[in-house]
Image 1 (cartoon, rainbow, N blue to C red):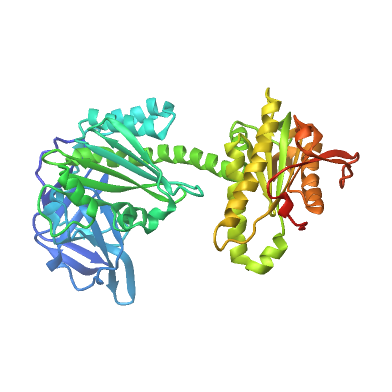
Image 2: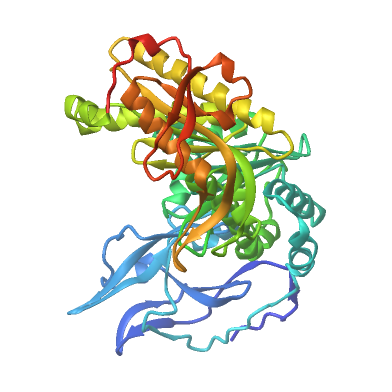
Length: 525
């Protein structure tokens, strides 16, 4: 019988006690383990676990099957199947072969998972679960109240770190790696340092996945679902499993933990903490973080979901349009009637280029064309609304400065031609030519489409005229053709007269905007 007085234990704790007499484990009446040296482990908010010395386990366990789980107090558990005749119970038993100091007493012992149909006969022992004091109340109270009003993940990371320090956690560094949905950024890494008291944010590209430093890092290990990591750095170990551990040891760190922060969609993000305290993290320190990790994960998930939504909208509909959608303009018909300069930039000779280059090389060229055009449009205050086949549709809203919008559109057109010429002049690059139509007028800037599928775009005669002028430029050998409405100084362009355009009811007074390469252009279609 267990005669321990049931006094209150620390807020989060692990207590291991020797059991008296003979303890037996059975499956379907068959003895699978029997020992007079069994132990019981009590851990905060977990069922009591009975551990048998490995020598007292009957020959019914498979070799280690590769499945692992992580505990920041005990280490990484390896699992074995229970094999009894034709019965095989997967992951029925676990053990900690490289147990951490807090639980060193169970080294060389095996326990059976509560879900396994294993009956434990405790003999004369009675389990007496300790009473633990409240560990996470004050921190959870902050997470549920004040934290909800922090606007950015950087501010949340800083306040969280400061709160943990206030609660007695010997924290010198905290970092969160949250993966994202972005065409160029793999995720965000928020790092708080107690030395500086500030948060530094890194946004690594997808190349991080191939970088040796990531390949051999706790971040990759944890995010790939291989369990968490804890390393005490203040005493000798056979060898550091990850290079960062040597770096942290040189900086004076004594303890390091990396644990998973799972999001609701199944992605595994990573929380890491380091301590410089001579004794590292206490069980209560890590228990506080461990208890609150699910709530912490939800905060970062909310932050990253908003960033993901913004980045995806900017990627597919443009920065300005994305901001309007995020601002609530999400219904069909939402939008504004505005004056704007419209640009329609079309790659010339695309059919011929695809035949000559082949599909892969042509797509690379097309991406270079889109990259050149969209970068220049953004640099001149415009926005690329969409790519239509091999063409770019861009808008330059006039607002209170229609003259500036017209100038921005014209400057963008010239810069695009120059940029494509620079691409063409590089050794090995094929000729990359475009046809640009420019117009100015009133358009509706907003949502159109079906109830299930919307498109944020511009609708109006100016957009139609810009596209048709681009087509007209191809037929008459001019790279940039603009309507009279777009030109502040039409005398600087070459009049083309009033031209009839497809699906435009009235002739449009058009002008060829001079570019250096016009004389060299052939009429490609």
